[in-house]
Image (cartoon, rainbow, N blue to C red):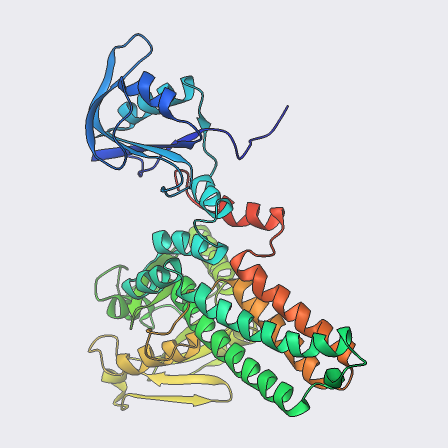
Length: 449
């Protein structure tokens, strides 16, 4: 049986499930005039909102709404696109979608509309990923950064790098193609200068990309410690609202409480966990097991201790069991009772921060430490909403350029490293992309986009 084709007419509900005032069904493909005529009784004027009755096979009305027709190539996908705006009930939208399928469309796969925009040169791959990042943005800063990628700022920066790389390759290739001519030796100083500038630009792009990666995925932080040291109070203070139950009874938190907060626009995903201790309570034991599971998946651990008692043997046993990759922050809580001053210090064993979850003293120092752990530097104007594959490719470009610098006297090897660097840059925007990579990228999109 043949699989889905990029030439099929596709259709999907383009709005979120549930009740709403308006819902949208989107159709894309070649020559949609016949489908539009049978569904609407005529073809709407291009790019004009037209009131229309959506009709079933027998001509009966399904809904009364708005139709928009975007003829190719001036559309999101580069194909004919029909957008049907009806009342936002799941049953109504399902009936409209079924009618489109009966008229020859097939149900779109996740991300297929944006994939077609990429295949029809309406977007490059980095811009297409910007669409998904804009939809998934958890903070305003992340949304602004994703919009810049969608509008092509990231792609433009990559394109400028590629242009400079091509110019350097032209100098090198000349010695390979015309070894007997006067230009058989590349001006070493010019080539070295161009290479150095390229390396500096790639380093800057990597730094900007890593900043954007922080905005995109945030920092995964687990709150852990002995029972009744104030973990839940600390979460409530950081979040600015009462999310977790706070009592004097040890073991109150039986399961993880998750909350995403923003610090200077950076999402910090905090998980408040069950207190780590030996227990005979079966339910609490399950919560403690889940705590260790959450710790294994985190970027940083806030080990909360009572400032009056300090770090004890039980706390040290927790530290000894931590994964090696985990960044440790020891939070000495309840300084309002211990009399300690609020402070934040970074040392060989991680951060040591003195706070009062009750009064808020020292909380700003904790917030600043979390930003540093995330690798964030203030200012988002030049940040790229980079994904892991973008960072990996840029790192490979940097490695290839470093190898090129070591082989400048061997023109063939020098040229080959530059070619590899250019190929890695091309993979970011989709100039060189395998089908399996495209499948992985667009499969993560929502249906209808």
